[in-house]
Structures are given as structure tokens and as C-alpha cells.
Image (cartoon, rainbow, N blue to C red; front, top):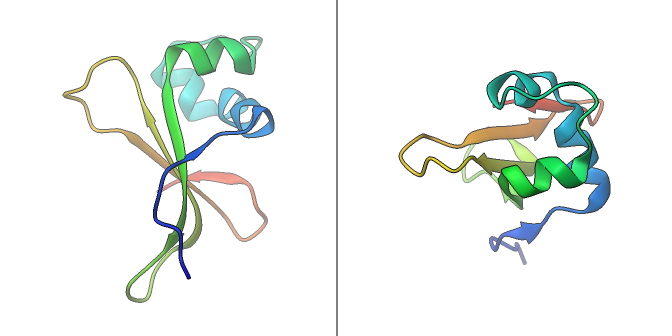
Length: 86
């Protein structure tokens, strides 16, 4: 049975998000900003995504800043398990 409900990011996942270059650029963060600080700036959830057709299956991260009118940043994992833009 698939779970299509949002999942809270773990501290390790927030560390990955904080280290992701595109997140640093889009939010104007320096490389030394810690995951706790990033978690305070960004709304973030994860889904165990299962595509209804051919496509992506796996972790799907939605990251949203404080501007609700802007589209969220969507991240997934590549074949090696590293974060990537979707």
C-alpha cells in the first residue's frame, strides 16, 4: 500500500537540503549555514512518491519559502541516491 501523505524531513535530510547548491543559491545562503537554520527558513516535506505511469519513483521533496505564490522547489534522488532537481 502506498503512502501519499507528507512526511517530516529528518535532521539528516535537512542537512542534505542545506548542502544542496541550488537551495543555497535560491535562498541566498552561504555554504556554512546549518540544517537547523535552513529548516527555520524553508517549509519542507517529503513524499514516498510512486508515479502512476512511467516516471519517477522514490523520495520527492517539496521546498517552499515564505512566498506562497511562488512554485515550490521539487527535489528527488538520482540513481546514486543524491538529491537532484526535478
